[in-house]
Amino acid sequence: MIIVMKKNATVEQIQAVENKLLELGFMTHPIHGEIKTVIGAVGDKRLLQTQSILIMPGVENLVPIMKPYKLVSREFKQEDTVVDVDGVLVGGSEVTIIAGPCAVENQGHFYQTAKYVKESGAKILRGGAFKPRTSPYAFQGLEEDGLKMLDQARQITGLKIITEAVDPRDVELISRYADIIQVGARNMQNFKLLQEIGLSMKPVLLKRGLSATIEEWLMAAEYIVAEGNQNIILCERGIRTFETATRNTLDISAVPIAKEFSHLPVIVDPSHSSGSWKYVNPLSKAAVAAGADGLIIEVHADPDKALCDGPQSLNPENFFNLIKELRIVAQAVGKRL
Ligand code: PEP
Ligand code: MN
Image (tube, rainbow, N blue to C red):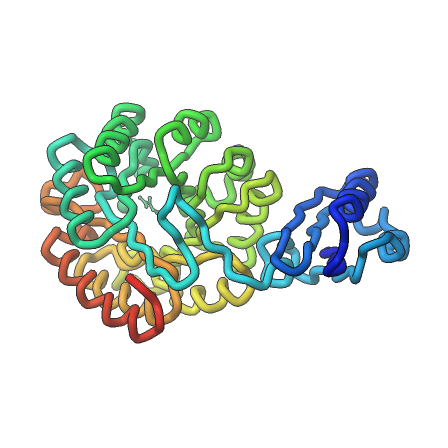
């Protein structure tokens, strides 16, 4: 539920309402807007006599949230959330490009790719250091050595960096290096991981699970925000369907729907959606046209030699051309790239 405070409510009145809610066992999340403050309250409604809140000084209204997810819902917050990644914005009027290889493999390829993607206009560099693979025998990532290479690439290029956490025990280590922590599709409902990331205040990229509904995806985001971390970017990365021509099926309608149901920014991963570099260009354009706030694209200096996801990685030239073409699409939908 949301408690809407009056325009002229004092700091003390707002605090008194929060204290009352805390006493009743609710978690409170105040949002101080330019005109009014609203307090999000999550907890057991049966413990609350709504009248006891409504009569408190400074309270204007009490609005229940009908959706099962609360703090991430559009009902809770009408304005779009813009996630600030240490100065790089995701959301609002920006189309933010995240690019880089699937995994950090070695210094040579990685720094080269980092320079290429920076020159083409990406703002954030991706690279997995902890790589959960479908097969336990496939390359599993360089772990902390990979994080050090990400850090080095950030220093060389000025790009922000994103990398995936797969184990709650690694969150503290990863947050020392990364600007954004990624939660992969297979971990979307790893609730311990979500809670641990919710306790760190780092921006989070939450990928949609392979077979998750939009509602389940938003409930996963709710786990993170319930611990206090509101810096969440949603990522549609393709879902399992009967179609086998692509690795997954990009659910393009998830973009406007997630943005309608939630105030969080939504980006698209055309690489894992399609599994083939050939389709990354048209799917990226479709995503931006549908209102995506950004893209996360796999790019490799030499895709034929990639240890992971080479067939879906763009080479630097194709990536450069894609960004050039995407600027026109972004402009057509009133956004900046
Ligand atoms: C990735 O981005 O490297 C990745 C593993 O993606 P997903 O979790 O979407 O499969
Ligand atoms: Mn990959």
